[in-house]
Amino acid sequence: MTLPRNTRVVVLAGGISHERDISLRSGRRVADSLAEHGVSVELRDPDANLLQYLRDSRPDVIWPALHGASGEDGALRGLLEFIGIPFVGSRSDAARLAWDKPTAKVIAARAGVPTPKSITLTRDAFRELGASSVLESIADELPIPVVVKPAQGGSAQGVTLVEDIADLPRAMVDAYTYCDVALIEQKIVGTEIAIGIIDTGAGPTALPAVEIEPLSGVYSFEARYNAGETRFYTPARLAQDVTDRAAAAAISAHTALGLRHLSRVDLIVDRAGTPWFLEANVLPGLTETSLLPQALEAAGHDLGWIYSALAQAAIKEA
Image 1 (cartoon, one colour):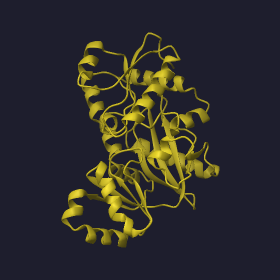
Image 2 (cartoon, rainbow, N blue to C red):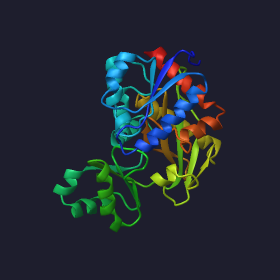
Image 3 (cartoon, rainbow, N blue to C red):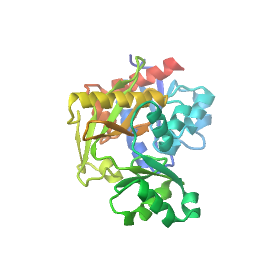
Image 4 (cartoon, rainbow, N blue to C red):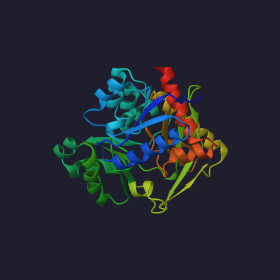
């Protein structure tokens, strides 16, 4: 299932989030892959004229490649639904659920997918209840090491692995730089993997798991997007039964959150072989170093064909 050559696709990339540069790289890769299959593609950076342009020009389908809040929190998707233009990816309600990491963890856990013990703390509560008292209480319930991250956001921005209690206050400040709510999560020791989910109309399918081995020990923003700073193994170096459990967990989380077309579920597989849900990405990175394209290629898929098939699925579901 691919797009007819006269189909008009608008790829949205850029935006104003902290992940603008990554979005531009993802958008260019999507646009180039579609163009190689003869699709008429326009790459557009959202601005104040975008909605009127879309209402006037009525493209056949939108391919959002916007990372961060501008593309993943559900707002833009809701507007596209409102003006009635098909788009690739999850609908606005599902995007809102997945975008908020604490909410996504609750939904995944209710679907039977283990997720690390955690606490969610607003900036105001952190200040009003006394930072020292709050951190002491947290340390009693969540022994070091812990991971501190913004409750919303991507690309590991504002994320800190805390291995010394003395570093926890600084980690909280870093997380609050990106979001008014911080998630403090138990660190699960194990193998970090990412499982891409693709659904072109026949139901969600898990791609080969990508194992992530950052040379620095932390899968930071730099480790994600600078070539050579992370080793990736696709498929992951795990036993087949463990990989199968992880794939089932990823599909369960994707389904429970109501996601569609594509997503990426990040997990940690502990030493007992149990996959732990960390988060779900409504719009996975699609750059040259991103995990979903690696998994697609490992599965033998042509990127342009898949991106075209996803666009066609969006049109059929409209």
